[in-house]
Image (cartoon, rainbow over all chains, first blue to last red; front, side, top):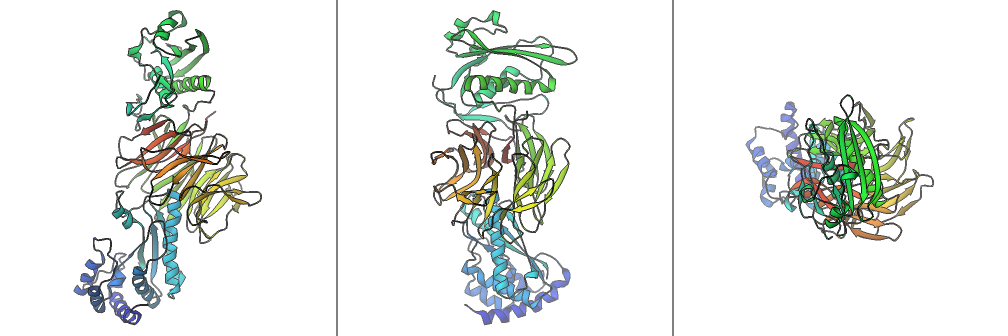
Length: 179
Length: 428
C-alpha cells in the first residue's frame, strides 16, 4: 500500500514528540506546545464529512509531525463494519505508535446512527470497534493494548436525523487511556 | 357510522400526578361501535377522577368504539329507571353505560354501572366496584376492560401498565418510567445519567429487566418495581444486553459478546446457570420467548442483513422466519403466536416501519405510515395493539397501532423524548 516507509519515519518522529508530552496524562489529544502540532490538530478536526481524506497538503505537514495520530475517528458506511480504505493510513499510524509504545493502552468505542433497532445497533457498534481492533492486531499491535466498547446509537456525535449527522455518528472513536 | 379521527386530542388528567403523556388518535376503524357512557352523578366534594371520561377515552383509544360526547346526550340517566331507550336509538347508539358513584365508609367509594344493548333494551353487564380515591382510575380501567370484553370477545388491557424511557434533549438524563396504559400516573423507577434501554417485564409484572449503558459498556439489571431493589444480572466482558423474561419468569434470555461476537444466552435467575443458545459469527440479538418456553425468536445478520429466526432450546434447531424485506428485527408475538410483529424495512433506503406477519399464512403487512424511524414494537397482552417508538416532528415519541393496522394513535410527551416502550402483562 501507500507511503508505508514515509509513514514509518513520520510516526517515529511523532512517537518522540508525544513521548515528551505524555507526562500530562491527559486523555485528550496530546497537548504539545509545538505550533506545528497545533496546526495539525486543527486540520484533524475539520467540519466537512470528508475530513479523513488525507490531502497532499496534509501529508506535507505530516512530515513535520504526524497528524494522523490526532485523527481519532474512523467512519463507516451504513449498516457496515468494514474499514474503508481512506482510514487505513490513520490506523497504520496508530498501529505503529502502539507497537513502539507497549505501555500505551487504547479504547475503541463503536457507535451507530439511529436507524435500525437499538439492540442491533449495539451489536453493530461492537463490530465497528472490533474490526478496528482486529486491523490493529494485524498490524502487529499486542491485543492486550486494545479494549473495545459499544455505545450503539446511544451517544450520537451529532443530533438530528439527516444524512450528514448520520454519517458522523457511524464511527469508532479511538481513545488513549495511557500514552 | 363512519368515523375517522384525525388528530383528535384528549387531555388525560389525574389529580395526583399530571400525565406526562397524552394521546392523539390518528386513525380509528370505520365500523367503530357507537357507545354512550353517561356522566356519573355525584354530590359532594369534587372527585379526583372523572370515571366516565376515563372509560370513554379508553374505549375510544381502542379504535373500535366511538364514544358519544356528553353534550350530545339528550339526558344523563344514572340508573335503569331513568333510561329511555328510544332517545339513545334516536342518537344511533348501539350501547349505553349508566353508572353511579356514592361514598361508602372511610374514604371508600362505590361505583355501580350497567351496560345496555340499546336495540334490544337489555342489560348485558352490571357490576359494583369499590375503591378509595387513589383507586378510582383503576376502577375506571377495570370497567373499560369488562365492557370491551363483553362487546368484542377480547380481554381488555386498559388496566395494564407500560414501561418506557424518557430523556431530555441533550441526552444527559434518562428516566425509566411506568405508567397506566393511557399514559397517566407516570412513576419514575430509575433515573440515570446513563442510557437505559430494552426494558422487559417479568410475567407477574413485579420486576423489570433492562440495560444500563455505562461508560464501561452495557450491563443487564433486574429491578423490583415495588422496592426499587436493583440487581446486577450480567456484566461480562463486551455486550450484555437485550434481556427477555421467560414465560415462567425464572429465566432471562439475553445477549453476550464475551466470546468475541454477540450470541444469545439463557440464564436461570435462581441457579445462575448459563446456557449458550447461538454460535455464529454474525450478529445474533433481540431474543424473545415463544409462549411454550422452549423456543426463542431472535434477530440475526447471518444471511447478510438482519432477519428473524427461531431457535429450539431443546434441539438447537434454527429456522429462518422472515424473507420479505431488507431489514427485519426485534421480533414480538401477538395473539398466542399467530402474528409476528417486527421492525421492517422493505428495501435499503426505504423507511423503517412496524410490520406484522401472519405466521399461518406467511403474509407480511406494514402497519405504520405517519411516523418515521419506527422501532421497539411491544404488543399489548391481549394481542390487539402494538406500542412502538418513532420519530414524529423531530421528537422521539411513542405511538400505537393495532395488529391489523386499522387503529393508530400517537402518544406525544410534554417534554423531551420518549423511547423503548414495553407493554406490561395482565396484573391478575
